[in-house]
Image (tube, rainbow, N blue to C red):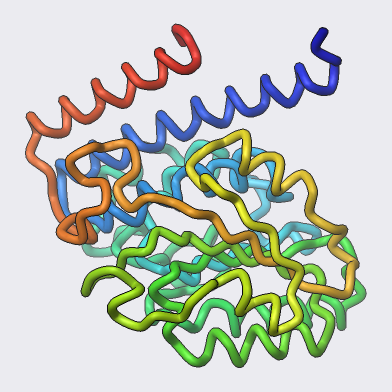
Length: 292
């Protein structure tokens, strides 16, 4: 017999999986309109949906509310998946993204910019800088006496090559920034090829553990049930140890001809291929979850 709590959790997982399906479809439609960083957007879609549609404390009507969680997209080129999630949360209309993306004076582009988009806490794009900034935000919240807000920071495994990441990781542990939650999109592929060939850093989880972080490993970071389980188990925001959630993902996840292919790091898809990819996503979702 399924308990009430288990039933609720299953309902949540299905709901978030549905969100991830819709975000992937939006990403593909945008990719048919212009170039985006589609491979990395697709790999991080599931955990981004879990964060933005359920776990983050956020008021779309008041993006500068002091009591909100902060969000830093250290993997700055995943701006499209962030924007579509914010739209689904109610920050703006989804059609705004299609209309304004990569246009002069538009709020949406290859990298998130808080000069034009008030729902962006930190402008990012230069890899390796998001975690240091997130540390500053976490320390600032503590100095202000805020013991409830988290600072979420999403990183790509390719940017872990940057030394600034590890300086920040050491400092976060030293100063006990327990409100900090790092998410690593560990898809093992960056612009120039496999991360193990560009610069082999060994185990991401072990490196953060050595720096003094609480480490949570998600064996399949594209499986919503595993993601929800990991995020539900996070320590409280007033803990003294930062947490990193290392998600094993696949670049281009959900689109077979994109998966594991570095050529889809940043590209545009033709209309026919877009339609085929969306149909395949819907088919796979229905096989797993039943009709919507």
